[in-house]
Image (cartoon, rainbow, N blue to C red):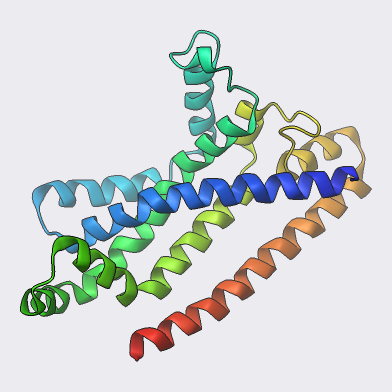
Length: 217
């Protein structure tokens, strides 16, 4: 396996993992923030939105401090591994997905509540039904999260160390090759990153259309 192939596979593996784990946390949070109108949610909504604007390098520094030898999780020896990269990306991606989900609930909240009460749905069934209702918006949120994860470089380099064949992803490899003056390699990696981004966008558009058709039915 050549170096570019290794970098691409490692990048996709890390980003898919961080996006899946982030989605499992962020989607329920987004649904709850959008569905229930109370003081806590009114406080948390702008807070999650604000977290989307925090510099990603801060997430890298926080994870580094937690998992360094003097950190509270230092005994795990996870620093400079793919595990800490996934954790750093999750800190970045969770607010992005959640802040995309709860605004999608707002326009249908009142009608959805009336329908759910009329059908006698439990809170769990309400969340499942709500997920179906805004499936296209949830998919768009997940894709936005994945796009943010695959484009991240600062936090990834801090906690991953940009180690060849271990923690070197596309973005960190581009930075390294550019600094070395190996512009041909950097350009190749850049083209691969663009192709991946476009492919994900087209897939998202296709799935989003299908989700909209299903919700109409």
